[in-house]
Length: 67
Image (cartoon, rainbow, N blue to C red; front, side, top):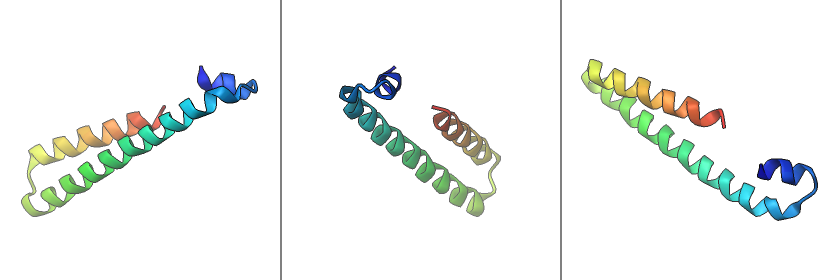
């Protein structure tokens, strides 16, 4: 909704959108760090449970990018 308001020329929506963008970027960075750690864990242990965790984390990351 805020994006539509900005597109229509309402600059008051800009701070809300910038805040959402920063939060989103932080969420994606957190998921990236988590899956990197899981890949390293898998490289040393070759554990199937870790593969499931990697899949779950990657799915969360992909879901985050659809916003």
